[in-house]
Length: 64
Image (cartoon, rainbow, N blue to C red; front, top):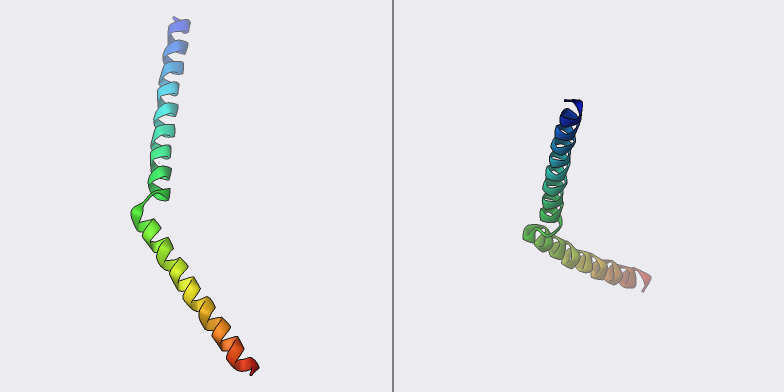
């Protein structure tokens, strides 16, 4: 009787662990491959280039 209970508990815990790992993996994958996040990162990259050009222009203007 004890062996059956231990086996049932081990199988149940394995399924709980497997389900948790699968759900966490799917959540992390959606977080990092989300098209909205990629578009937002591209927008930030372009904005960073714009700010960099502005800083260079300002420093060249102020050094003259």
